[in-house]
Amino acid sequence: MKNDKGILLETGTNELEIVEFGLGHGNFGINVMKVREIVTSQKVTKLPNSHPNAEGVIQLRGEVVPMIDLAKVMGMPPSENPQDDRIIISEFNKIKVAFHVHTVNRIHRISWEQIEKPSEFADADRSTTTGIIKMDDHLIILLDFEKIVVEMSPKAGINVATVKELGHRERSDKHILIAEDSVMLTELLKDTLNAAGFHNLHFYSDGKLAWEQLESLVDNYGDNITEHIQLVITDIEMPKMDGHHLTKRIKEHAVLRKLPVIIFSSLITDTLRHRGEVVGANAQVSKPEINLLVQKIDSLIL
Image (cartoon, rainbow, N blue to C red; front, side, top):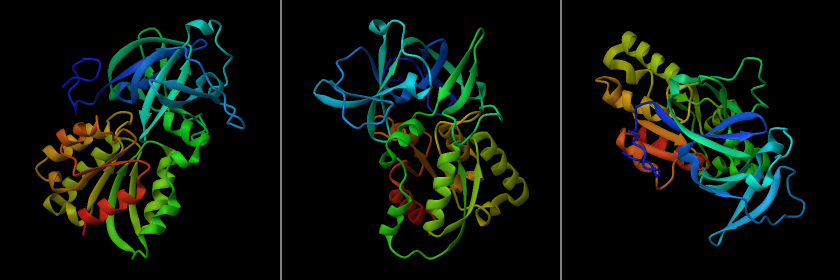
């Protein structure tokens, strides 16, 4: 299977490709699956009363796209050579966003195993770092682009209040295992699913920890595992083991394959949905669509 840039990348191998870019003297990364294209400097139209990190909007082939100054987000000085700056056009959570960066260096193909979690000294509530990649001669910091956008525009994120649209919900005794590395999204998911009647939620901060727990349950309960876990929800982008690889391992396991798996990710788009289908996901939901997630849970664990 090839991505849009023609690089061979089979789904479910626990590998990813990142675009390395520069801000000041720092090296940062974004998952290739979030990138639609990279362009040179564009004419920017500033908007009144906008967020300090918002540069304005650009017009790209007739489409108006908001642009964020990543240097401002990261508290870094402006570019020393603005004429050479680049703009990364990104798509996730069903929206397009342009990120203004200083340089774009190259694409790396790596394993999720190579990605370290942010330092324990980082403030998880404030940090925009999701992982650190050790290269031979430098470090690359993976940024939490969803958090950056949601902090600027809360409407782009999960809205707990929308669960009320589903009407009265009875308390459920079903147990759900959830793999999600974002502290912010973990809390939002907990609040939202509690409001939907689900209180037996078991969270794991990466796919590897979730897999180890599932293996432990198989060792303890064998074929009776569905009496202890009724459904798995997984993000895609996580250190150590991504959601596609976790789903593939579950669906290839003689016992675990009976568990329904929902992939809940900002990367569920028309062009990327086939990746979840290849690894056997029972459902795929884009992160803003929390009502749809609840409906999928209802349909899979009745």
